[in-house]
Length: 470
Image (cartoon, rainbow, N blue to C red; front, side, top):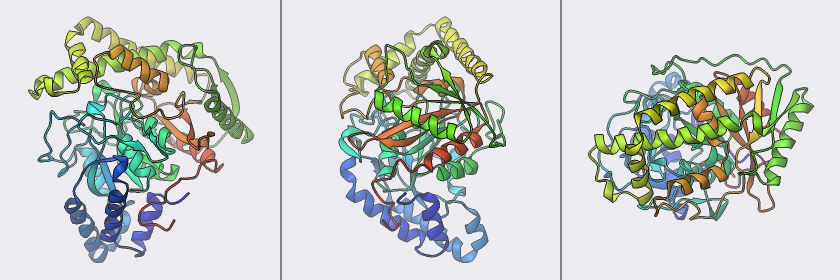
């Protein structure tokens, strides 16, 4: 596996290296991998202050130190979401300046309680509006598995840093596939949790009418399970907590979707990976239930429309509330903001109603199956520059994103948890990702099935984690 955050935390806990040494090694790795463009902002002093505090706690209060699951583990926050005190977020935009850093969000506090040592921000497209992380202000984020290809978006910098081994795990956000698409591009595990499982307060600035969630991109399923259990629960609104439901590893009905419709077809090698994952689960005694594109077609289309409307209105409101100089934004961002201002209240109301109907339709589908297994990406990671932002054609941009990840928005709009992991590699040694979705609160089941597929050993990380033996 070439290491993960759980292994790195154990090495620090057992005294094989200190938190400060782990941070120094991560900083050196960040310098070596600077051409990837994964890191938008770096502050070694902030990182060392956290690491040294960890090392002091290890000496003075070893039980408290050991109770932190990721004590001393260096990590990076995304340049969108949070915020994290001391790390000035700009959302990949020149509309904000790199100063301050504000107070910790509720989620940031939980990251620190878990023992993470944060030392920078990862690259995001401007306001997270793309499935590539190539903001005009730079840096352009590249895939460490093939630098000519995208690392995905909008958590592309996070995924590139983790896949390259700069850090073992990194904060990420997902409003339209933004955790899962980069994870799929870079051969990582990425989970969008159940709506309301992860805290979004106190400002709920990244809530986006419920479609956005925050968590991490990871190198293993066990890291995903551990960080989810560490950060989730008691989210304090705006929806009731959905406590994880105990998973009994019995015979499940696995809904198998191997068709993304004639408009946005998925490449054969990616469909084959989904089919092979189904066979692996069937061999364990689970029942495979074929699903047709018609079962999900309306929900998928409505989800894409909801994503476009919600992010447009949110962006327009943000620019107005923060009195930002919109003319300095990228042309595509300006077009989204203009679209948001032009959207009528009646249209937005219909969009929000359709989002509820999407959730209801997926709930009905879960009356017939226990889990849905489907593609994550329609094609291999695209070339750098495939999602340009120097134009104002929103429809073209949305079409490009949908063609690349047709099923990305469904989990966001419906509120259901979804997870992607690599299940093999194509002829160019790029990952073949699959996606699993289960009912709300069923993260334990999702993670159990993902661990079973991971155990097949069909994907190996290319780069070791900084601080661990290769």
